Image (cartoon, rainbow, N blue to C red):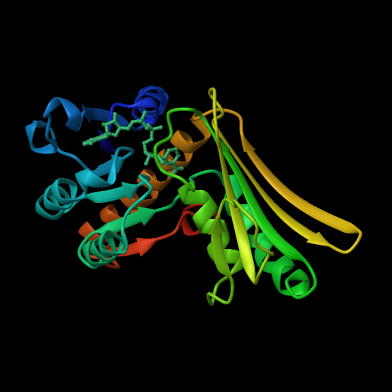
Length: 247
Ligand code: NAD
C-alpha cells in the first residue's frame, strides 16, 4: 500500500516514522502545504492519502483524491459545517475514513458513554475537560466535540465552551480546554450528581497512538479498494474508526 501524507507537522512526522516501520506500507510522499508542495507532485501511485494538517487544505486534497480515485483518511479537525458536508459528498465517490480521534481507547469510551449517558443524564450534570499541548490551534478539540455529540445526540443541551462571570448553570454541557507543554491529548467526561461523581478519562501518552490508528484506517480503505477493483463491493463510503477497529 502506498500512502501519501498531507502535513509535515508534529503528527505528519510521527505518521511517516510509523509508516516506514510498518510492513506492507510505503510512504511515497509527505506534503507540506506551507512550503507550496502539492499531492500532484508525487510521481508514484498513491493508494491512500492521510491528512493531518489544517482545514484550509481540503479543496486541494479533494481534487487530488477524486482524480486519483484513491482512499482518504481524514484526521484533521476543525472543519466548518460546509466542509463536513464536502467530505460527506466526496465519500460518495471514494472511500473515506474520518475520525476526530484515531485511538482505540476513545472508540471504546464512545461505546461506554452511549450506555452510561441515558442512565445518568436526568439526575447528573455532564461536563468535558480536554487537555492538549501548547501548539494545538483549535479549541475545543475535535474529540471533545465528538464526545459532546455522544452526550447530546439530539441537541437537548446547550454546549458552553468555558465559563466566565455570574450565571447559574443551565441545561448545558460545559467544555473546557487546557493548553500547555507537550500533552498528547487527555479527555475527561464528568458526570456530577448529588454526593457522587463518575469520571471517564482517556489519556493519549504519545502521538504514536493516533498514527497507528490512521495506518489501520488506511489499510482498511486499501482492502476495500482492492475488493472493488476485483469486481466486488464498491469501495466508496464514509467509514468510522469503529468500523475500522471493530469489524
Ligand atoms: P501541527 O501544527 O504540528 O501541524 C499542522 C500542519 O498543518 C502543518 O505542518 C501544515 O502542514 C499544515 N498547516 C497549518 N496551517 C496551515 C495553513 N494556514 N495552510 C496550509 N497548511 C497549514 O499539528 P498536528 O499536531 O500535526 O495536527 C494536525 C491536525 O491533525 C490538527 O487538525 C489536529 O487536530 C489533528 N489531529 C488529529 C488526530 C486524530 O486522531 N484524528 C490526532 C492528532 C491530531
